[in-house]
Amino acid sequence: ILNQLNKELITLSMEPTSKWKNLVNFDLIKERNKAIMPKQKITQAPFILPTIPGVEPVFVKQQTEVIAPPSSKVLKFSTLRPVTPFIRKLQECYNTGNYQPFVDKVKTMPIATIDLELRALRTEDDYLEYRMIISFFINQLQSNSNFDLVVALLNVFLKAQQDVLISEPKLFKKMEEILVLHKEKWGRVSSLIMHSLS
Image (cartoon, rainbow, N blue to C red; front, top):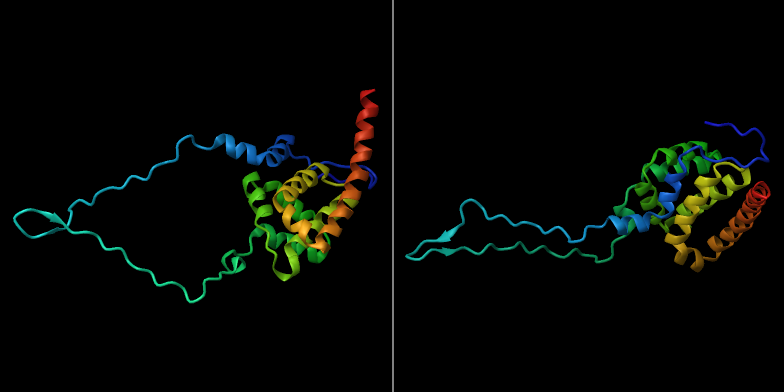
């Protein structure tokens, strides 16, 4: 863990740049790596096929089991999806206000898992998971730490959850706050880059 020399300095996550670039472009990577022809399921015949006794062998048709429909057709997605280690760690850090353990957790996760976690946020409990991740973004931008990690996660989050963020006024207001913070921080970085190039 690299400690900030000064709170005014913007620090990076010390992870390879390619990790965060790959996370941002994960949709393209999945599309490029998709198989050309889908795998076809090979149906194997049983060793002995059941037949009806007689002069000519007639195969017995397999009867498929009829599954009774559930009493309610409405399923809550939240009941099917357990709380993941990603969300559990985020919630712990949200409650304490210290997000460093969450940052450490994200750094160890594969990009496919991070992408899935950001796409599978639940809207239950008044958008609690959304509010927790937005609070993380605000905290990290205000503290000037892990800028590359935050920008990559924010990029995926915005692409995946834009419909929810636009339709929910409370979340939209928080995203405006992130926009202001991001412009301020990126403006500083951008001006330093331009200054060093000239």
